[in-house]
Amino acid sequence: MNEIKFIKINGKRWQNFDHLLSNKDRENGNPDRLARLYIELTDDLAYAKTFFPKSKTTKYLNQITLKAHRQIFKQRKIAKNSLLRFFIYDYPITLFRHRKKIIIAFIFFVLSAVIGAVSFNMDEEFARYILGDSYVNMTIENMENGHPMGVYNSKSETLMFFGIAWNNIRVALLAFAMGIFFSIGTYILLFYNGVMLGVFQALFIQHGFLKIYFLTVWMHGTIEISSIIIAASAGLVMGNSLLFPGTLPRIYSLQKGALEGVKIVIGLIPFFIIAAFIESFLTRHSESSYFFDSLLIIASSLLILFYFFIYPYFITKKLSHEQYVL
Image (cartoon, rainbow, N blue to C red; front, side, top):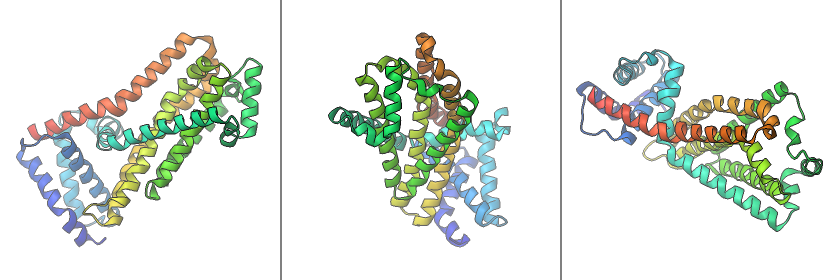
């Protein structure tokens, strides 16, 4: 897209946003609308810097963005630190904007897990098809030897940490990238992982190890699996931008969707590292204290619920109000 077309498509929206900032308009404090305006402005600036780095358009967008930052983050020292600002403001706003896709991804994953568990109960050989003969045989052998979660003791903590962290990030990137196939690729990957989890859980339930399974797997799985699901929602963001471009040119809509999807995935990296640390250094000792296991699962659940669902709503609402009142 050339610069003239870029201005023609988005110019009116920039002027409206600039007017709101300059006149401190108080008419509409709707969080959805304000989150959309702010995120679209930063996305447009990123696009302009990439394709028209020295143009007046880029300079103009940069000025509006700086004005927005000065008002939104006024008297906030945290605004000077771009990394902290990303995780405290920018990232939660992006999550809030795409909360419906995150919820859809969660529901789809849970249904997939249910399908996996039901399929295993109907045919136990289904586990070997999904998990592989060697893994199923190893797991059953560990159960018979009284160490159902022996797989978590098979490697040193450090090697396991780096391997798990990389694998989780790789899966997240793949879940996002598969969204380019009109979101279908992401749904397929999400379905497979959900089925796999359902089968794995059903296998332990069948052998009478539900308690140990739940307390061991969900110590790290609460953060890990939730993060993978949210990474899949990033794929849906990109895929839906291609499927439903609205009034935008399809290629430009895809670029914007991809940028927001990348932002969602990048924000998950610390959570994958935390999950890898728990799985590598703590999960192997899960049977030593069921109270600690339960406490960690509850704390992880509250962290996910707060940071990915509750906090984005309140911070978006708060900033949108400030943006019109300042």
